[in-house]
Length: 114
Image (cartoon, rainbow, N blue to C red; front, side, top):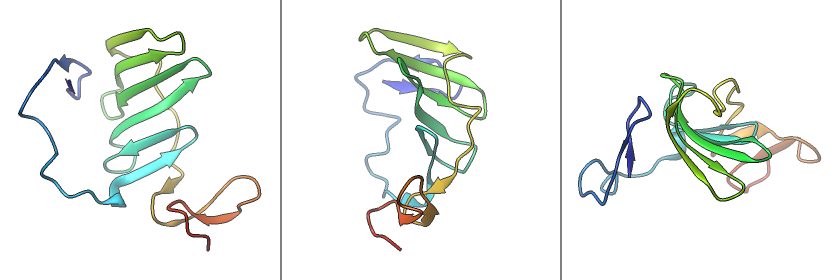
C-alpha cells in the first residue's frame, strides 16, 4: 500500500515506490503531542492518535488524511480532511535533548538522559 500526498492510496503488492534501499536517519523524525512526523518539521507525514478512539496517517502540507484506524478495528480510507493531527505542533526531534513532560524534565528521546 502506498499513500500519495493527496491522500489517495495505491494498492499493492508493489515493487516500486519504496524506501527499502535508503539509509534511515533520525534527523527528520519529529514528535509532538501523541504524534510522530517523518520529514521536514511541519511538512511531513504524520502518524498519531486523534482522540481516544482514532489513529490516523496524513500529510501535513496538503491537510489530507490518508487513512483512519478506529479502536473498534475498522479502517476508514481517505482521502479526507478530518480526523488528523495537523493542528498540533512538533515539539521535539528524535536523538536530540528535549524537554520531556512529568518527572523527566530533560531527557534524550533515544533513551539517554542528559
